[in-house]
Image (tube, rainbow, N blue to C red; front, side):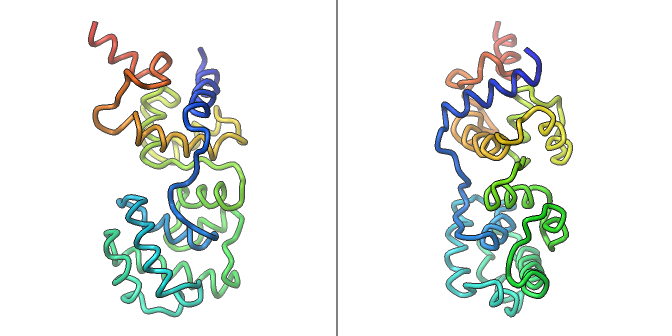
Length: 216
C-alpha cells in the first residue's frame, strides 16, 4: 500500500467512524473563531468555549474589542492561560480587522497570516470552517496521528507536516479529515496509552504494527 493509498483508506475509515465531525470551538462568525483559536493555545476547547461566553458578554463586537484596553481583555481570558500575550494579540488583531477590513475577516490565506497572533494553523482553520475552502490544520492531534499512522515519516514541525499532507490528502477531504483526526486522537489514539486494540486503523497503522511486533 502506497502512502497515497493509505491516506485514502484512512479517510474512508474515519468517515465511517466519525460521520458528523465538526470544529469543537463554538462560534457564530469568523472573528469569534479567530479569537477562540488564539485562546486555544495550551488550553482545552471546553474551557475556551466557557471563556468566550464571558468575553462576548463584555465585548460583543470587533469594534468593542479593538477599543478595549488589553488589560480588560486579559482579565477575562486569564483562565485560558498565557493571558497577557493572548489579550495583546487579540486586541491587536481586532484593531487591524476594525481599521483595515471594516470588522470583517479576510477570506485570503496570506492576508490572514498577516494578522497579529495568526499562524498557519489558525489561518487554515478559518479558511476551512468559515469559508469552506481546502485546509489542513496541523494541531497536536494531526501531527501525532499522521506520524503514528505512517502518513508522514517522523515529521514534527507543523508546516512540514502540512506540506506533506497536501501531497496525499484530496483538497475536498482536507478540512473534515483534520477534524476527524482530532476526534480519533481524543477517543482512541491518545497521546499516552493509545487504545490500538479498538482502533479502526490498527491493521494499516505503522505504530500499531510496531507495537504488535514488540509483543510477539
